[in-house]
Length: 112
Image (cartoon, rainbow, N blue to C red; front, side):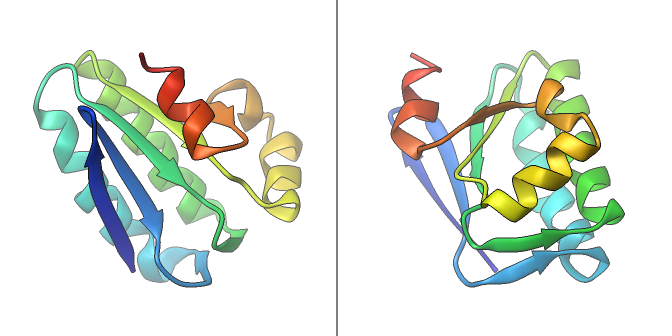
């Protein structure tokens, strides 16, 4: 489901296959990614390029991760959102809540 790497102190997560971020995988995402924010000051970015659809539980997982990051002085940014998914972010006004970048490189640079 997810692949991760450490890039100069930034944890990078991406979905390794085309998928939907829905109730089936949102809890696993929340647990796997959220655990990194138990360590204060964690910098983590998530690529959504392979996500074609997000439902309410998927958005709930992303918001939960953001909350956990903020509560422990961490940083959580998102990058590479498909146009259809970005439409959902805009519809829900979540593009104002999350820091969203077009590319992984831009997202990593923002944390330097």
